[in-house]
Length: 480
Image (cartoon, rainbow, N blue to C red):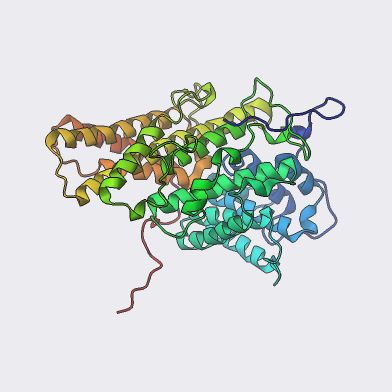
């Protein structure tokens, strides 16, 4: 993993105390531009909930700077920052149905009947803020707004809208040259760290487009992917409070940073698409961006190599992030309150990240296993009984390990991962449908048992307002 590139202390030898800041709830005399969404105090509460619940997996802000800017009312004079805060509200509301219900029952309740209504309203306000020259000067905030809205629409099942906003975010990411480490020269430490995180958040969408949707339109092209030193784009593994404008303070040894978990998640996506080994390894130059031009046999070889590396990419993770770390006694209660400060909150956040990390790791393996099986089928390769049994044992091993992770983490810690998590769980579970073996065969019995467990978990996690159509091309009209 990366180490700080500019570790230092300030002139007095002190560390930043921005971790102790809280979003300001001071009374302003202005009429706020967010009043059409909700009361100002509730608006600030939603932003605080984002920082506690969603920031670890969607770190689009620098926490101390964000605290300070909100407290000073920057959204009253800066439309880009206002758009950022509103898009943060949208993604929090879309991802956390339980929080939406809490806000409806607060002292100053939300007036929206559904999460979808509120997300639509957030986008309407953001669109109204954009002047004709909006794209003349781009910034990281202008990237973050469509990115967050894309995630929000995905969470509520509006996949076509999500895809269109994703395309806008990808284009802004390319214009910002997020994939080019040289573009960081002259930037502050804060801006550099944010751009590195933005690169990987966009890279996740790239892997989805290539591995799952198999699209040619992509964030990063084949040449750029092969010439970019991805290691240089991994964020420094310290928490935001250790990052000042002109230097980076050392992370306390006893505290695992959220950036460490973020980097492991990025490394997992990276290993699924191309080699994480240093450039120059023989046979490691291809990536999923170019395999569509390969023969099926070559693609099988490529994906087999990816699977071998991916399986062991998380070896040696910190104890707090290991897949077999068990939840504390009594932690399964959905309504268990979060510890709101210090290491108690950090522990909760790391649990959510641990769930996403290992579910993603297993999901990516499952996707590749199924891709290899489909390629063999396209070559008319008929599996003999032993090979078929090996394939099904491989599928069941993935499912068994995923259930182990899910049962070791409470529902309240899984919840902040939203439908990104439930879709991955569902993708893995469906591989157990249609067992070719007899109903009395142990493989079929295990498959049915695991499916029942997945159904139970998904019933607790999936609060979608509509049926999932994420894998359907529902926006295409075929003219007769």
